[in-house]
Image (cartoon, rainbow, N blue to C red; front, side, top):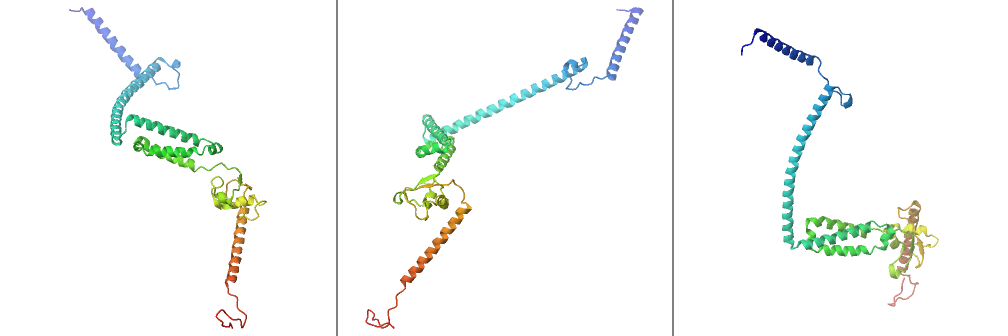
Length: 293
């Protein structure tokens, strides 16, 4: 189609104006670049250009989070597959162990329940205060007997129970070793029944559990005990709280042993004197008819 000179001129003019507008727009953008608004600036105070930049920034963040999410999902799937494989291998090992010890699932479940009850009773006794525990101390030996019965079963060596059995035995032993509550009094019993003396009394677990602490009982009962080697059945002795010997108790113990050594030395000297033969008077005949000088 042929254009008239007038149409040609109009078209050229329009093209020139369009190019000029584009150049002007580019120049405007280059001379007035939009600065990103700080994060602390509220959305309601943003200019149009700042809002556009902030939206673009959030779109980029969202895309990154979506990419990270896809990556995590992939890793989770891989880990789930590895976990399922490990569980299957564990089940295979457990079945093989059960076969070796000749135990069924029902027997293992029964053993698991018995061990659980034993552990529960151990926790119950360990939580008691001293007075309540003393009243139920005999139950500890029943727990030890039950533990021995469980130990004699082959199921006890399974990995699921092995460490728990060791821990239960350790806890039972700690209950056996638990010292009775300190009561502050002790009634002396006959020697023929309990061999009560200050040394043995101090060594009893319900007193000090250490016979070397006998001076504490002596010094707390000097009104009754005049000689630490002699105590009478029926005496109610004061028992001081457990603890190291006081300086006064140590001095009393040293005095006791010093007197003890002196008495032993005197007895030995007396025995030696008695063992020496008595000289016969001059001219006295011996059993053989001889005369001594």
